[in-house]
Length: 69
Image (tube, rainbow, N blue to C red):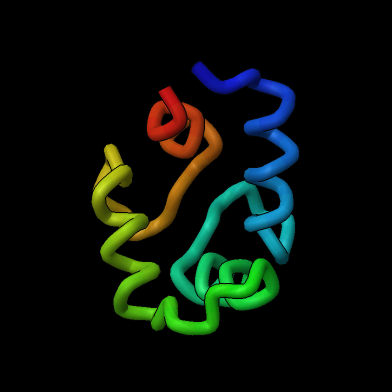
């Protein structure tokens, strides 16, 4: 089980514009920064969609946290 403070820091790293949501563009960008340039926007959206409880195509912190547990 993840520690909520670590999860919040990770979420904030992905939430590049600080709006409280992670988009596919943000996810793709951070994955490239972390050394995985092969994550396309389509792949990023698929990852987000697999954890997107409300179906808006974005990840909230609660959805991100739920995916960690």
